[in-house]
Image (cartoon, rainbow, N blue to C red; front, side):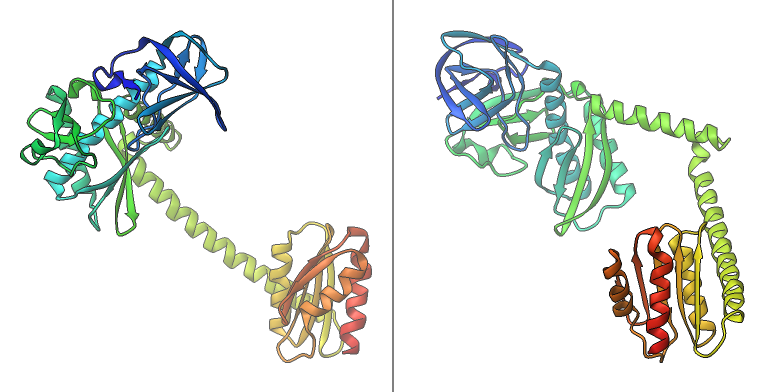
Length: 390
């Protein structure tokens, strides 16, 4: 059994220990110590990092009663461990903040916590409610931060499971025997083996970033402490920059963006209408220059994307009984036909392009393909011969 020093002191940054064993592991060399301040991945909280006698500790694993320290080389005898403190303190802020946020949701919104996850970039909290309004989220966030601002003490103690019913745990304990309990004074009592700050003020601000429906409940994404500050910093920077670009005050940005969105939508609709009209006019010109019935229309365009060529082909076969084989100079080909004509565009285009090293396919009425640019004219000629014979 490894003595877990973080149980007594989450603030312990350095320690000395004796190497009991080294093991081969797929992740590296696993070192077993008689005592450790390194926290292993557990309860949704990520593991600590740091060094053992200069060897980087990249992972820490809870192997039953033993803690495995994954390093790049074997160690023996007495070693000195150093915890990556910024990472540890960040985890302490997130984990303690989660306790407060979970209790705040329970009291202010009647929402119980079903699971938590502490990630490198963001943390999540799953709640057993079906809906969450912005007003409710703001009320819970304010409530949680009020506990932070009061700088309440946080106590950690070992309790026999027989005493647990009288403690008012927010969630039932998952362990038996001696249970580690973390208590935020007069607010929250939780069975937890994680690392925590000593007072709520050290958590720093608690920020609910967003939420979504998840497996019948609601998943909250949140930041605490330094993460919340960095989140607010970059968002403030973006808001000020965009507000300056749009020549509005920062609090007017949302309305300005909505106006711009509506203008862009209107402009897009106008452009679509203009493209439709232009395509129809050109389709009429192409049909006017094509003899017979049904008409066969072909053209190679050097300055148009295939999307415009496809739109034009569609207009051609809609206006008159016809077949359209239109292409771009880059080698993209569109084949379309009017309804009722005995031509299968997908089959025809594939049969023409594959012998030329190209490829194509599509529906009976409309197909697209591609071939080497130097073979476009040959492909269109072959298509003309095939469909006119049909």
